[in-house]
Image (cartoon, rainbow, N blue to C red):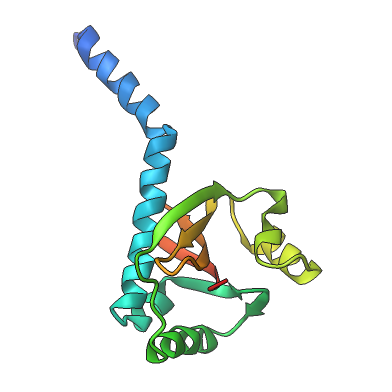
Length: 160
C-alpha cells in the first residue's frame, strides 16, 4: 500500500497571463465607473418605471434621506411610493461621478452630527456615492453598496 502518484499540473503561460490580466482589469477604474453607471441607471429606471416596491426592498434600515435618518421600513416604502406617485422622474440620468465613501463623505448629504454618526455606524466599506445628473441639470445623490449577491440603497438626496 503505497501513496498514490500525484502529478504537478503546470498551467501554460498564456493561461497564467490571462488570469493575471483579469485580476488587474477587475480593479480598473473604468470597470468601477461602468458598475457605478449601471447601478445609477438601474435605480433611475426603477423610479422612472414606477417600481417603488423594488426600491423599498433594495433599501436598508436605517435609511438616509437628504439629511434625515429614516428608521422604519414602512416609512422608506412610503417615501418611494410617494415620489413615484408624485410623478418624480430621473430623466436622462448620467453618472457625473462615483466616489468611494471616505470619512468626510457625510458632508455630501448634510454637515450634521446626525449624518456623520449615520455614516460612521451604518455605512460599510465598499459603499459609494453616485452623483447622477438629470437632463434638466439637477443632481441626485445615491448612497449605494454593490456586493456580490446584493445591491443596496443606503441613502438618497435630491434633486438639487
